[in-house]
Length: 330
Ligand code: F7E
Image 1: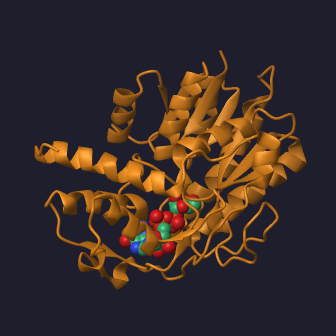
Image 2: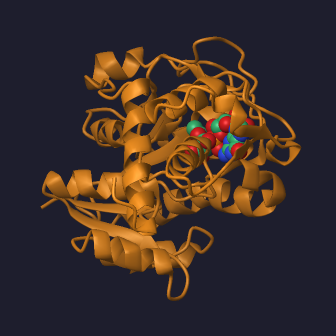
């Protein structure tokens, strides 16, 4: 059985990827940090097949120990401070985990690499946030980076160090430059889930307004379940490389809000939405739209779930969840 080691196992992508790899017959190991981490229990409850391994991206010896214990064929580095807004308040922590954490993981792989018959293959979760104030549209693997947040800066470091270790030490290391990807497992702090959850609660009479920041920003939103397949495909190629993973479509936050309200039959959405400066960012990424041609041609990957289906899936899921919590029959 092939063995996969995932950092960020408690997050949206970690859970989708663990499920996907389990379905492919992998033994799945997931790294969890901290003491009595409540999110670790949630992973065990949801996916008892995942073997949890202690470790922290801020602690190199713990990464070496985690790899020695799990002896993986493939390492997926999804762990990070991933919320852009938080990175402005905790910039140093973000640089340490989201940026330097990649370097530590690569070093850990080099340290124990010699004990393996087959070299470990490494996947790094790079991000469209690296394009920031975009230099060209649509963005491709060769578009220059101009990050607009401490998160984006840390991801640029992670991306560049992967390229450097690949070129310096011949590691099999790939970066997936993933554009926004969402779904029912998305954390409530991100705009898609914040909107779909609020819309569900408003429809059920449990909430009366939705307070947001910038409604003009545009994002290329895909479905997380589609995107984890691309991560795996990258590690199955003869040569390691970097790939943009995106839908090639962009929509504004306003369009997202309008569509989510329409899903529950509310047309006068403006009556429920208020803007508050506290949700605006010190520097914004105004427009993202990715060109996934290389992934389509070389990996045979394409997104299956489009924007309308994604919003509908998330609103319907939140309706079920919120109704069940409140004891409301739908
Ligand atoms: O914001 C605007 C906000 O937090 C999207 C992460 O997975 O994708 C994600 O980063 C947009 C921004 O995601 C609110 O200003 C308006 O323009 O959902 P988000 P993100 O910052 O694009 C990339 C690819 C990653 O790598 C990241 O890890 O929505 N917006 N009002 C708001 N955003 C939030 N969160 N909350 C609001 O109230």
